Image 1 (tube, helix red, strand yellow):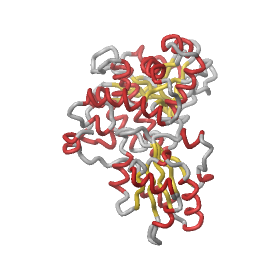
Image 2 (spheres, one colour; image 1 turned 60 degrees about the vertical axis):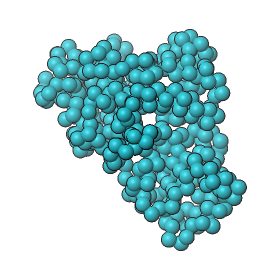
Image 3 (cartoon, rainbow, N blue to C red; image 1 turned 120 degrees about the horizontal axis):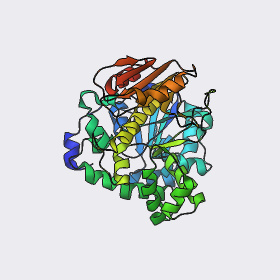
Image 4 (cartoon, rainbow, N blue to C red; image 1 turned 30 degrees about the vertical axis):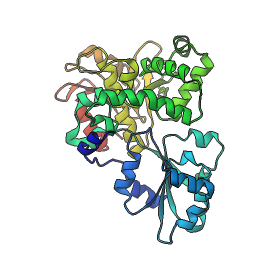
Length: 386
């Protein structure tokens, strides 16, 4: 974020209540860079001691003597934040001891758990829960939300409010994402990963043909699997499993994949997602996946899946085992647009069937409710779809 952007960016209250989480237990907080983890911590955990491992002085002091952490904590320090914990995993041993001996609650943040998990380090043996921070949501932005901006710019805070969002997105999708992969020690073949990333962007919202991706990216198929795991581990990509409980129509079992932010996808694809363009529909679907996944992570904890039959019917999202959601970026939804929902309704497995659209007012078509996207999101964040 540049200096100009910092001056004009408003303070946005996030849906994730860190103080409430820490009153119950220690937590890991993971999320892609620039989702606002550090800002959220400083905004909501005032007076809590913070160790920022991106600060060279702090990093060197604790790397040379991890025991310094306990030496610096006073009896009144009941909550402690260690930012970018993956940079110094050895501190987890000290955090573990302080949780056991002094009852301190830790918030341990990072952009990925990959390095911690694969390094075989102490992940606190169940003494800490894990939460993820996503880009901004409709609920958090309130009156500042604009659909065209959300789709074209994406919802990373520094980019949504940027005075040069295109340049910021290019920087994020280019140098940052590649550097992040190197920092994770996941791969050193940056040219190959860069080729893969562009191809993967074109697979957004689809069932991935890994052989085709390997051919297009000029890397072995086994490497493509590894690269997809890297994107999932660094929370850049979400895997959406198939809902497989339909009986009348045989379901597919393959997963779909969505990138975490529409602005980043646009840069990877070399496109600008604008309302009315052919590419807008998939971007709109990706945006709604982000909203539902964020709601699940922050509040409901329910799984998100999709349904597709071997005969070709497909419904974009299944929330838990109760709500089917089909997304249509149209101002006038036709009866043929609702055929997948109608086919799924014949299974009589779910509680409600929704078509989320650009229509201005809600209406009912048989057993399907057609909703404006904004009304759907208000109802979602109010907890109506449980």
